[in-house]
Image (cartoon, rainbow over all chains, first blue to last red; front, side):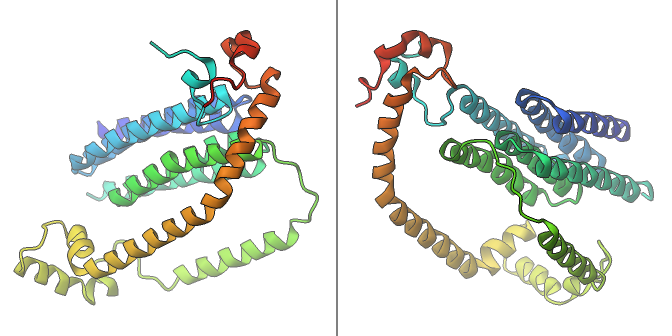
Length: 96
Length: 217
């Protein structure tokens, strides 16, 4: 059961890496990067159960947060060309 | 139980192959923005390999430093440098030979190591049993890694922290001189290319000159 799921996750990882390497636009790569982060969490979980040590499932939380931060940083850079861009200051309005 | 090592070897080999593919893609990529994203992917794959090797703490460090902080820092660097790499016409023969030679030396060096995961390797016989017995006798933390890091190597860790802290203070002091100059120049640049449509959002472009630098205190 866990062997099967690990195999499928590895297959998905393979396909996603192919997309990341070949991807014509940057957005393909951003999406592939986000997906690989998610697949890394799944692989962590399934390897944890495979080796009878599911204690480190918590680390998946860290991975999820990191994935979110990374994607936010990349997309903010893409939209504004600057990580320290302040919408309230530059456009004179707050997001409310 | 005989199945498990084979599956582990398979997982690690597949992940290492993917890692090699990502590395080749990073070498061939000329858009630095793509390189940053690919290096984030590299870190996540590397963290997965660490997990498959049962080094979960290293995996967490790799993921948080490689995929988290490095991505953000590299993007901040891209803002200062621009994101296209110019192809260079220098020969790659000497660097290629050098890196191949170093790689060959490293592989030759691994031939002297004991087999991976063998219980009677010298590292498990020398001081390991003493540490385990001592930490049991003195009621140290039950996790051996924590016991070694926090108790046996306490002064060592204190010294490392002092070194990193000193280096951070030094870097801050060095940067502080140039920081004010560059941030003042940044403000002027923003006012200059306010009408440039590139990398601006639609609402920013619609507001046009009304938001030009006047609100930045």
